[in-house]
Image (cartoon, rainbow, N blue to C red; front, side):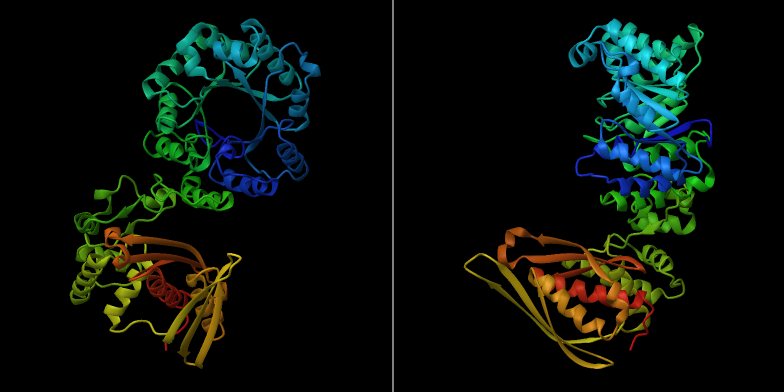
Length: 532
């Protein structure tokens, strides 16, 4: 445990219930060290016995022992009604997982006992008592998730609290108050957790109180903080707030708030500084695009657009930032747009490694050209590569030059069977000579990309690892119908990083061509290829 609040990560189990997420055993094994890196004290691996993939995961963990600091928890349920705990196969699977911690989900809402478990309130209490006591006797630390705790307490407070007391008396080290439906508000969390803490004291019982919040009312992190204020010393959540419906409490945001705003020692400073890296690394593994505006770790969390902000930030960055981004491993970014003034451009250039503080002529010209371009339909909010190319062109008097395009054409084809394809021809010249390259693709933009890459990679092998990873199209002024302007933003990646460029044209092909060529020019520049 790094601090005075224990961090319990349930990304691999509850987070994996998010729509569109499908984690393999290999994915989970890859994620483990990332979750340990940010400071998770306990990592919930899954539900052995109920999900075959999770059973295999725990088998792999037992054989390899990959964790160096964090402890592993297996998730499961109390014994079934009317079944002796020693004969319950699901309980046996929990023991077979060899996880040192077992987290049991227990019904704490009397309505769920009657309608979901279809048993009596007394039998449910026995199920909790028997399962906890048995697992403790087997040498496991047992934690109990009090499912529907807050809704249950609103319906029948005495019974909900009786389930919690029964779990602690049977040997549970921790009882976790769960806002399973995600509809609670902070004041209700504060009151109920405080009542539970007081009741355990009155009963002479010692146990840690935890919180497990869902985000259906967009209160999961706020409810987590409220619970800690009321006495909880165990927080559960998932990286990036993954989870079913609207997700769980974002454990990274909760940690940052507790550590930086509430003075609670949750993780080390080094672990705190790793939050942004972990957020994006996990997003990459689970194949879900990172949320740009995610607090603390999002790429836009410390992005500034308005010129007024930029002028102030140039004097003191803290004037428009609630923390130093470096504390959580993030960076301040200047967004260039038609709202930007010279101060914004100067800071953006500095971010790119260019000192233009003594070049007011360059700052004024870049500002003027950006405002004019955005009036036409260009956007530079998320296209830093296009911004850098423009700044360098103005600052040094010419565009970066690696190749000259003589011409390009595209051709669409189809058949009576309904199959379609596209072909593109690109004629270009480089320092190595002239080339004519044909590309085939599923559409004209894909074909253009293939043809352009083919012509360039033979001369510039640095582009072999460069790939197009995202493509966004927007029709400006749709009411103009076929005369409307099209804007395209293309994202590319290589070992040197990820960048985006913007193109504008009368149609998608023309706009894409501008974004593509600028993208490859920037890729060559990032690879350190000398200009001609």
